[in-house]
Image (tube, rainbow, N blue to C red; front, side, top):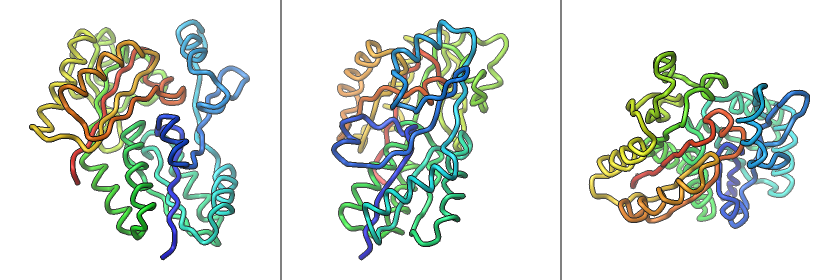
Length: 284
């Protein structure tokens, strides 16, 4: 049976210990600020980035890896794992051109077995799929069964987050269906989600505290007494609040697996400082 090697991109926001322990190859996206280009989670310190984000008048942009960079990435993985099939699970094609670049590179490498999956999500909504795929690959599960399983993980995943302001999503062009809240509603702390690969509004809420409590309540309602297979808390420069929410998640949801992660600059630059997210999925 051919081996399957799972790869992903830096917007999966996998905790560093998970990446280290599982050995999952990750291709980073990029942050462009003024005349400088930084590698997501590698050459730009998150603390410095979020300080700049609040202090500087100019705004950063982000970009996906080029097809050429993907070619180099896939070749390096194939060199380490000869004859293996590379399964790439990447950020939603509605949010980034990463999926497109990966497919362009695949077409340029007919000698390497590559399959590309659109996660239709981001951050741990993507990360859950990657971890599940990696675990199945390690168990020798066939490729088609792995892909079918992670599609079920995707369909059973909830990703809810509250932002301190809609300004960053708006400026970064990733606001999706939340655009209808712009204008008179910039002071809202709305609950947002990823639906059909895009940012959409769940509810309009006036304070972050109430938004976080509603986020936890919605999770309990969705789970209806079930324990999630996995859950995770993500934050953008809001570690103290995230730790408090983590304690509530562990007490109220009792996940079988839990992940705590800080969002890297590419995703955090679009969500903005103060963002808190909760992701979880049920049995599939």
